[in-house]
Length: 71
Image 1: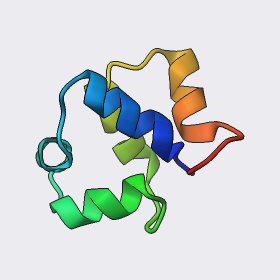
Image 2: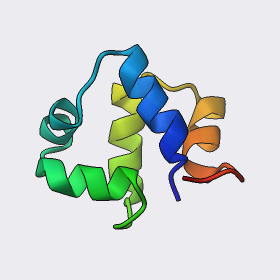
Image 3: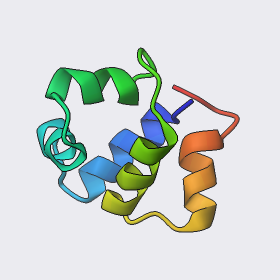
Image 4: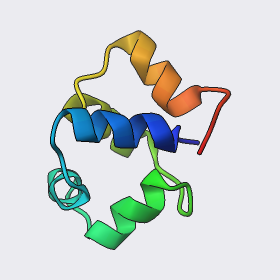
């Protein structure tokens, strides 16, 4: 599951909107909203692309997508 708080904070740091993230991942904005908020599952390929967009290091990747504190 995604650490929603960290993803949203990082998006804000980079001035990214959910619409821009959705366009980058080639999905509808409501879909990315559901994935970021853990309503729908995010697949590994999607997480990899999101991590690339958010410019995450390998260590950060683990914190954002495999952290103990979620949502």
